Length: 213
Image (cartoon, rainbow, N blue to C red; front, side):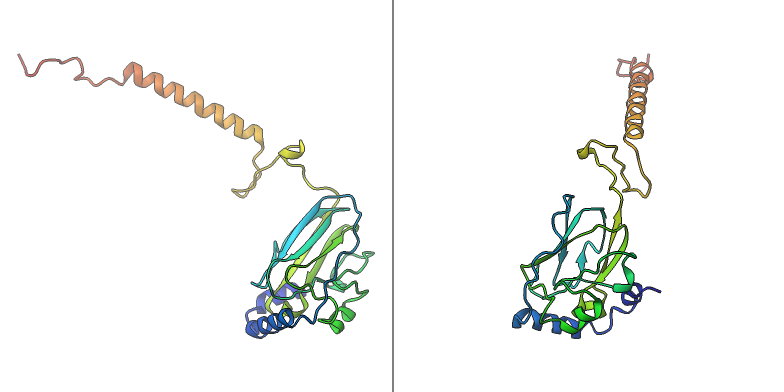
């Protein structure tokens, strides 16, 4: 079991303690803004919010090689963005708020270094394919973890000129299937309307008298 899965399963315990320590770090101002790192990739920029609910939002994100992820602290509680050294792809440079070279150094120096206070942000450009797992040092115990999946290229959307797939019902739906279904519905409606107009009159419609002979 990976550490992030274990933390999700056990995240309920110690929540109050972690929240208290996070608030203290944010209010005392012992941390410093980490600024940015690894910019200039030339790709798309994606944003992940760090909230006072002690979550990364979204928790899991997929980006293309050369894309940049910006973690913005939208609350008042201080957070860190710290990669799990053993859970990033082989050959990838280690990354963490504070610019550390390894996970242990990031842990040892927090919150003096690596803290991202409310209103500040940290960013990293991803150049290595694979899954990068990361966490927030003060709130790791309550399951504040996330992943960045780096792929060759993202599927194009309609806005980008490519084919778009809708996954809202659990399976991809291509646009031409939507169009075919629309045409079929129009055809059925026309047939139904024709049937009603031709055969839909009541048998009593022709009886205009008020009673029998």
